[in-house]
Amino acid sequence: MPGVRADLEALTRIPSVSLDAFDQAHVEASAEATAALLRAEGLEVEIVREGGRPAVIGHVDGPPGSPTVMLYAHHDVQPPGDEALWDSRPFEPTERDGRLYGRGAADDKAGILAHVAALRAHAGALPVGVTVFVEGEEEIGSDSLPTILERHGEKLRADAIVLADSTNWAIGEPALTTTLRGMIRVVVTVSTLDHGVHSGMFGGAVPDALTTLVRVLASLHDDAGNVAVAGLKEGVAADLEFSEERLREESGLLDGVSTIGSGSLLSRIWTKPSATTIGIDAPSVATSSNTLVPSASAKVSIRLAPDEDDLEAFELVKGHLLANTPWGAKVEVHLDDRGLGFAADAHGPVYDEARAAFRDAWGVEPVDIGVGGSIPFVAAFAERFPEAAILVTGVEDPDARAHGANESLHLGEFEKVCVAEAVLLARLGALPR
Ligand SMILES: [Zn+2]
Image 1 (spheres, rainbow, N blue to C red):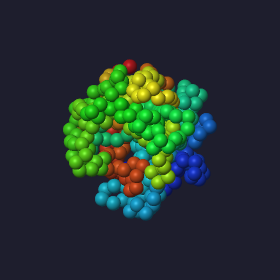
Image 2: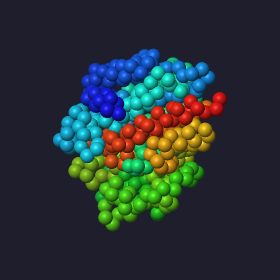
Image 3: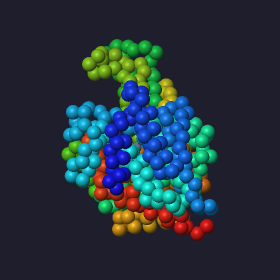
Image 4: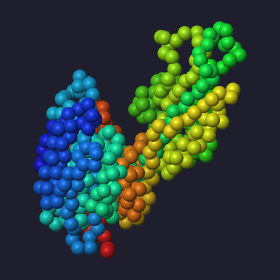
């Protein structure tokens, strides 16, 4: 572990922010550094670019007839944000109370080093073939990933895929992420007039677009706060302890404001749909005048059950919005973005060995968790390699603060992640052929 830790710190010192406004020479440097780490473990390595940031692909054969395992992580990071909010410099990894602080120390450079650690544990005698794929643009949406999978997919083909970019349930409680929600983002535009008119002269008989839009948006939920679009799927979340107190604290919900929706809290944030209005184009309060607004738009972010089809969901949402537009107002609904969710088939020999490996490393049984957000690359891998078992693992814990100030890695848990992955390779190599 000391060597793994030193390599993690060196990688974390490279400020490989993939966002356009940042110097992309650092992303090149982190790709090179990642390639060097893999070469040192005996992998044949190339850096590929398909119109986006550099990705690193490394491969080493296993014993004849052994399965191939593909290990995924990403070497790009989020911007540091306001450095004044950090207690130590974001790109100077610093240990405090058993945690290593730094942008990317957890998300996802520790994912890269977990893979390297697993390779090192088997140095010279890998029980399986291993392909490592380290992407360089996960934090900006993996735009060129579909092209990489199309052009280099054969190199990435594997019997099992380990995507190390998620989280564990708690310190001492390992988890496999078995569901992710899908999403669609829609823009709804309501028009009632061909120009703005005096609200005193016509208000009372003529509907304005903004009030009409508000009624359309209000139709997205029932009185209890459940999404009211008929036909959308709802999944069942794992039965884990998750208190309302924890939800209130983690989300910053104000005293007296109730939660919305029904069913378990985890089903509401992991497997049931949600609808959130995230922006409105309308006159601002400061510049508004006594005018009936002729046209107004809103952008709505809708999260979908893990096994929902995003395009079918869009048709349902569009139909709902059209049907719930009052007073014959003109309404247009446009699909702004979409992404499939993920629901693992969390059974079979690979999952059995993964759970056993986690048990070996932690001494406790791992739990299955969901994540309410969407990770586009997971669905991309599931689509490209439908026959592979996909394991979504991770180095994070609830205090990791990925993307925020003071991102950190729990070093004790990280060691267990490394052990679990090394044991997993051994277990997969020992499966009967
Ligand atoms: Zn990540």
